[in-house]
Image 1 (cartoon, rainbow, N blue to C red):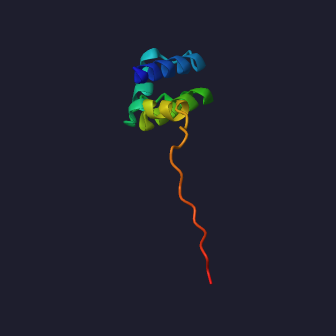
Image 2: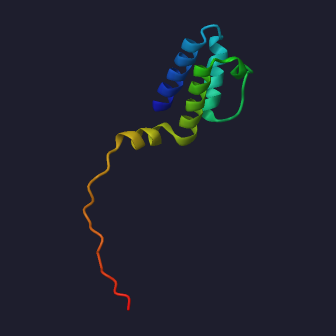
Image 3: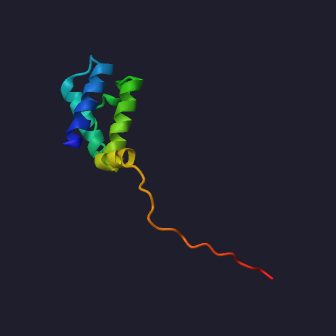
Length: 92
């Protein structure tokens, strides 16, 4: 479900930045970027800077994983229930 949302958001943002691009080509580029397969229809060079940033972020999320990124940002560090022992070392 998270992957579907990321891909849908990516397609939406690229179409928002470059409305002249055909939907099928944009969807193929985003699916390819998320899957990190390296396929392209050749429109990547014609995209605006904002769209290229979106495609780059989609590639990152596809490679690392949406759940991993979500957990990294949402999960808070718990308080530790243990304590490391401390020792003074004498050197003579």
